[in-house]
Every structure is written in structure tokens, then in C-alpha cells.
Length: 349
Image: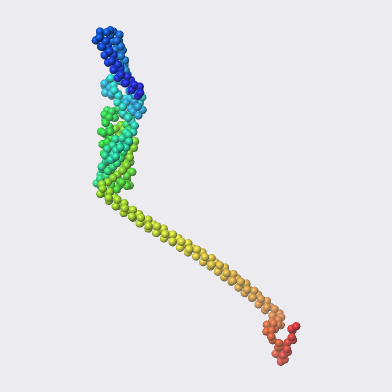
């Protein structure tokens, strides 16, 4: 780029030098001075000027983010192949080059169109939904030129005016068509992403057919008429209240469930304690029953042994009777056939 600029500067200066040399020679001739050697100077300056101008007209530098289209006087008027980035040579004065950038460009449809460099803007898109509501779409389309199709499509087909003649009307029409397939509530809520994807797909195929590459589509905002915006706001407030009431109900349900769980836990604890007490009573009753059984068996066995002893020793019964007498009895009763009572001897100390 610097070399081409220097050559063009030198070419312009060479013409000034040639004019100066001619004036100098003419002045000497007017004064009757010799001009033979000075004419050669003029010729030399002329040759240098022509060479510099030829070089500056034949050399074209294409930036790394550009492609060059060569316009020629040959048949067709345009070279079929574009100029690649770097220093290129064209036929001086018979051909000229026009460069196109293939870096990203942004077409913004919004009230605020000052979004940075390489951006051109337009008013937002006004469209109607399937139920007749009017919406305003703020969006941006990021695209670039397809380098392989810069000659046939961008230069020949659109004459470089692809933005004004193609991108702007096509993009706006695609957005309107996509919006018309959805109801107003679907546009701003559940189907917003689906709307974005639909526009992106249509833009990709449409731009590709024109020699452009879609980089991104950004649906930035959807706004409504003031009347419908007020309706939406009222609806959202009502929905928010319903959600708040549902939240309160859920809290109460949780509290009720917690109370039920607490009551169930206490009931289970009481049941477990009752079961424990019942088991203890059963064990105690079984133990008492077992003790009574053992006692009864022992008494029965004792009675049996006593009966055997009485049968073997009848006087034992009389002895047992005497042993049961009260300790304060001091007389002894003889058999019925003996009417005498004898005092018992004092067995004390």
C-alpha cells in the first residue's frame, strides 16, 4: 500500500517537474540563450513522468480484508477472477480496480442506529401478527460478502449497491412474513426463540443466493402499541397476584403436611410406648402365672407327701394338731374315754 502511494505521489510530482522544465527551456529560448542541452532535460523528465504514471496506474494494492474487481476494456468489461489481497498488476489506463470489503457488516433496524463502525441503520420494522396486532421489531443483521462471488453477484448483479437494493428490503420483508405466522402473545413469550430461528433460517438462504454470508441475526426488542402494552401489563400484574396466592397456598399446604407428619410421629411414639408397656404387662402376667403354677405344683406335691406320711404315721396328725394349739393353753386333754384334765408342765426356764 505504501509503495503504491509513493509511486502516485512521485507521478504527480513528475508532471510538475515536466512543466517546470518546459517553462525553463522556453524562458531561455525567449532570451536567445542556448536550449539544446535543456531540451534533453525536458525529454528525460517526460520519460520519468510517463514511467511513474504507468507504474502507479498498473499497481494495485488490495488489503487483507478486501477483494478487488478489475474493470477492463476487454470483452465482458470485468475480469472473471477477483484480485487477491496483496500487490497486483493491471493493464495501465486500460483497466481499473474497485475493492470490496468482506469483513462483517451490520444492518441495524432501530431508533438508535449509531452502533459502531461498519454499521448502517434504518427505522425499526413495523409488522402485524396473525391476530392483527401491530408490533415493532428492533433487530440487527450481521453479514459479509462471499469472496468467491464478489465479481458476479456483488459487482455485476448489484453494482455494489447490495445494501440498498437487496439487504435492506429483503431483511424487513422476511421479518414481517415471520411475525405474521404467530399470535401476539406467542411473539413476545413462548415462541419468541422460534420466531428468531425462523427469521435466521430464511435470511441465511436468501443472503446466500445473493452472494452474501449471514453471520448472525439478533432480535433485540419487541414492542407494542401503548393500548396493547397496557393490556399486557395488567395481565402480568394479575398473573403475578395469582402466583403470589398460589405461593401462599403452597406454604399452607407445606405447614399442614408438616403438622400431619409431627402428629404421625407422636402417634407412633405413643403406640411404641403402649406396645412396650403391653409387652411388659404380658411378661409380668406370664411370670406371675408361672409362679402360681409352680406354687400350686409344690403345694400339691406337699399335700401328697403329707397324705402319705399321715397314712404311714397316723399319730403325726395328732402331733400337728397339738403344734397348732395356741401357746397360752396350759391343760392337756386326754382321750374321750378318760375324763381327767392334767395341767401341762411348765417348760419355761
